[in-house]
Amino acid sequence: MEYAAQWNWVALAYGITYFALIAHTASIAIRITRAHKKLDELS
Amino acid sequence: MKWYAKFVIPAVVIIGVLGVLMVNLSSALVYYNTPAEVQTREAGESRLRLAGQVVAGSVIEEDTTVVFTVQDCDIAVSVIHTGTPPQLFSEGIGVVVEGTWNGEMFVSDTMLVMHDEQYRADAGDYDQDLHTCSES
Amino acid sequence: MTANEHRTTVWPWIVMAVAGFHVFVASMTVPPDALQGQLSRIMYVHVPAAWLAYLAFGITMLGSAMYLWKKDLKWDRRAHASAEIGVMFTGMTIVLGMVWAKPTWGVWWTWDARLTLTAIMFFVYLGYLALRRTTDNLDMRAKRSAILGVLAIVQVPLVHFSVIWWRSLHQAPTLLNPEGPSMDTSMVITLLIAVSGFTVMYVAMMFKRIELSRLEDAVLVSEQTSSGPIAGHGITSPDLTGGS
Image (cartoon, rainbow over all chains, first blue to last red; front, top):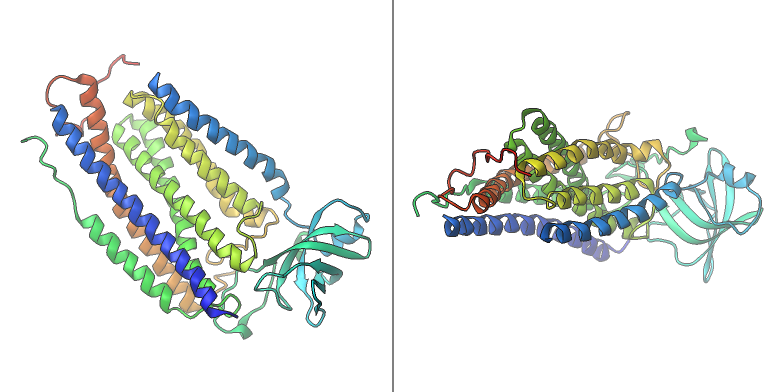
């Protein structure tokens, strides 16, 4: 069994996992900041 | 109308995709046939999938083909597969082969490895069971 | 600049980082599977992602049912927040499944019952999110999506039991196996750590996503009323009597 190749698949999987979690979390944070700004403008 | 465009475009895309998926679902519900079922089939061109465990000692590898026997519920079928088998292909493992039944052999051009839900650190603890036997 | 102080909770970010770190350490130190080798490590993210998708859609169903009962928009916001996170976890499950399938089964994708039904579930909940954009009327939006939020839950048992009910390439459940977990104890413990880590991350994300929903609703309400400062009052249910 080629272990290097196997680790590449594992790295890809964990990369995707943490990227997705961080990206979604960041998108929530950005949208929160934007909503605050919008509320400031409206009030 | 703004909300209209916002909704209709995603709706059309999503319904379209769901339609494609539904069409595929009907064939997905019976993903494979057992060796016993394949043997009762008439020889012909219609494509089907066959699942079973690779019998130990039956694998003969040649340049572009692999000949082996798959077995399930004590019924065995010979397979001639053209192409490179997946990495995990080995004796004793479960496989799904796609192709045609010529009355004597299953002629396959696509092979997928099928493993069960066990995970063991030590190979000796394995007892592969694909749960296909009790069904037929 | 008095009403809207930009108060925002920070602890969910910290909790997420800690949970994420634990999952990583646990799944990298567990012994590999004898058959699959290192590839078996993908299980410790693929399985929790799938479980969290189930949980998230379960919470969406609960929130939707509670909204239909109580007519309180806070339940609608919870349902929405959970659906968005659930869609992310479903997408993650599918992509991780593909990355796992290619080196083990030999293909990225095949039309097996589990895979097909999961893809359908992904697109139905994407439809739920699209449905929410059809109207700016908060009560009407909540009602429409709550009905779908309740109905769509039937897909979760369908996806989960598809591997038992129909012949599939995908293997049967390992942990919730009727005959007990068919896995070494060290792997069971690691998988449980990973599932709880993902659950903690889900809860943390929910806190922030609900905070966002409250703000978004407040923005909508203040745009619609357009008079008087509304910021800071966004938590209260808007009065839209007779509006359509």
